[in-house]
Image 1 (cartoon, rainbow, N blue to C red):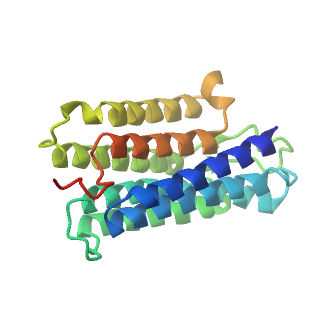
Image 2 (image 1 turned 45 degrees about the vertical axis):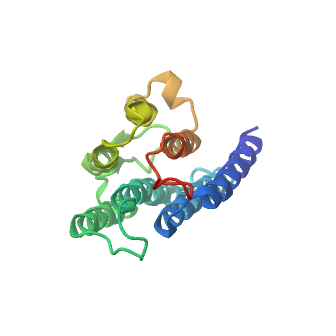
Length: 230
């Protein structure tokens, strides 16, 4: 059942990515859409491989750490998308603050990957055969969560500012709702609330990302057709 749902999810991501690429007007928006699709497919593929391995293996643990590469990359793509939508379609270079956030995420990712040396991301007792289910969170994990949450809020704020002249004033209601629900879901997952903890984190976050970008397109926040400017 888990593998079947993963395949359905991958088909959905591929179909949505192809559809969004066809609808997008700017080349930079197309690049952001393609990057989103690649990140979601890479994340779920890593998850699929991880769950085919015995939990006690070192490789299994590092595949788990690898999840955070995609989790930290996704908000950066959204930030880039929010920043670039009103720029000339000529391959605009990332702003300095965006590069700084990328560097911060890169540092956090390095700390996650080296968790076995310091236990700052996950507090693991590897001598415990059940370590994959009995672990705690460290300061790096909470920093990762704070980083992507803050970046999501900044991206949504930029979209709000840039769409304030749009004729459809209610266009951001659903994007804001999905952002709030995603943050609440992440909090519930960290606190191991059964409704969130028993779900598949990778697929749920991916679906939130797709829904967020789709409603942004349909509400006119993102330019997706040749008559958008008019």
